[in-house]
Length: 218
Image 1 (spheres, rainbow, N blue to C red):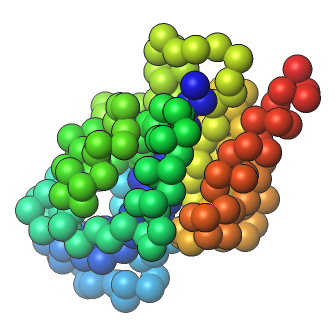
Image 2 (cartoon, rainbow, N blue to C red):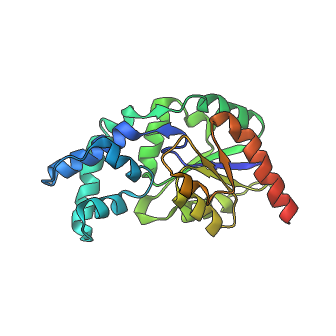
Image 3 (tube, rainbow, N blue to C red):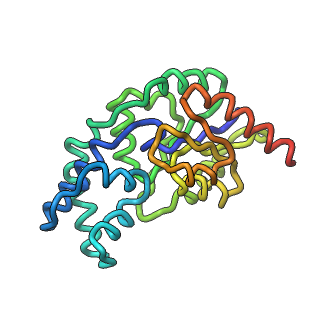
């Protein structure tokens, strides 16, 4: 059984409307003007604290915590329902599951929010577990948790995501990665991935190639 780990935002679902709308909600509540949505897309994927630190130009933990709370105020009532599944992703998740792989989510979102998104979109049935970055944990920490689970040996795990933080986390735990071009990462970020998929239909072949490359390196 192969372990396939997916990022959520920008990989399985397109969260742009919900995330950017919720960021602007927090900014306005804190007395700042709204920012054009296109300018906020680069903050899709990384942790919220780092996004607000850059947007507000601050490092004050209390203000950052308030910004995140205001963001979640809107996201948990409205924003999560604005997520869309990328075209072709449901079919690929089903195909990979039927091949006998165990699918996981590792996301910078809080775990309960990620579950809420998956349930709203009818995607939760394909994932064995959902791991979120609660309590300031890093994505590499989530990958270590997944790797520590009891699972058949001999089949390498792979991380699939769209941002450099996904690929760096995979490298930190010695795992290959697949970058996806339909998300929000730049071409420069994708150079850090082991493989790159241009459309969801490319994923099964990319997963097979990463498995072969790992086995050949052993």
